[in-house]
Image 1 (cartoon, one colour):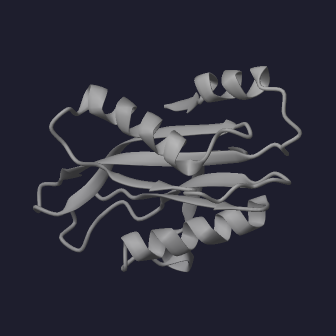
Image 2 (image 1 turned 45 degrees about the horizontal axis):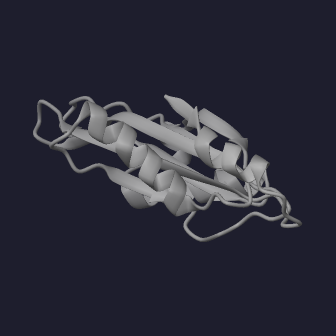
Length: 152
């Protein structure tokens, strides 16, 4: 599911520039409804890249395009690094919640994208985003696993 923004990276590599390396990441998540009628995350589409010409909006367009190919009539939940450029390098982490059942006992799943100047900051940001997306998630009780991570 992880794809490098090769077009933007190729353009950046061809461009002679004194600009520092920058990177970005984005994820679009398809949601579905479980047997209890509650929503859960079904599939994610991750895009990331490293180039002076890449920003979160470039990555977001690519992730949305990937999502639209599989789910043309659906609106995904998306998160991206925006205009933030990690000139000295950054990191992204996509975590998956360890909470597998909702309050009704039906299937439950959530992913969250975090980013920062290093891996630790990216994990902290991802956990904060996971708590925002799933108010019942508790790290001590449910835990999490890292599904995807890389430098940007």
